[in-house]
Length: 293
Image (tube, rainbow, N blue to C red; front, side):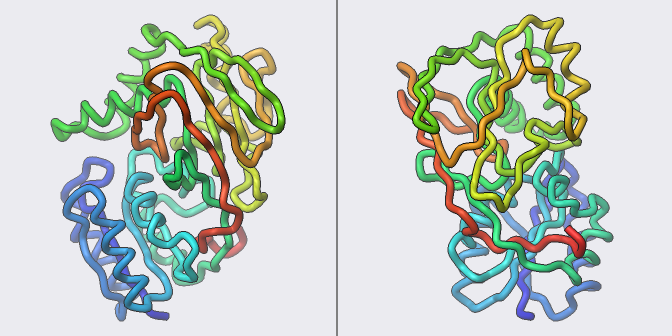
């Protein structure tokens, strides 16, 4: 099978891993071509050219942002996407059962099978795991600013998150979905195609990437002590505290509020004004998943 490999050498804040990843790729896919990403958006350019050149599968080593960039070019094509997780959280990879050690991930891709997966859209831009409005989007924005100094990784993310928990003031949103029209003031409002942010923090444990629906999860603006008590349940596959979260299956939603709306797509922060439209493209991406998934 004609294969192209894309590697982000700085994903997860580990700059020394690029050539190590490349050697492992060559061992498992000796006939593959490939390239390192050099700047934001480069993965999209590389993947688009690989599709034009007739590659049947594109394997990407990187975090959720790099995966998002690569997958954008593959939506609606027959070229399959394979993932080697090298980010801080690796939410989509964990949801799909892809091994986190890169050696095992490359090996697993040799026997992986293509699965037709859903693709989310927010104001016309794709997301493949999660999109959200609220505190998580603000944390993503803070993290992106912090990362301009070259500081990435899990600890800075959690540190910024802890700071926002005590200072964030939720916005009041008008949310239209499933024929309903509600006024909400959520701590965060998540549209989940996959199940988790990463690090096994499962915001939507019942989400399925092939069911033609998004799980819309509202984390309510409850007291800090209720959030603290509820936090361990987000590492569970089943139990959720009723007074903290509400979940609805939907194919889309329209979110409105006056002024700026900060949101994120697979952890990458975005900003729009007044209106954010969420929609879904069923079975629009061929995604390589481990044998037995």
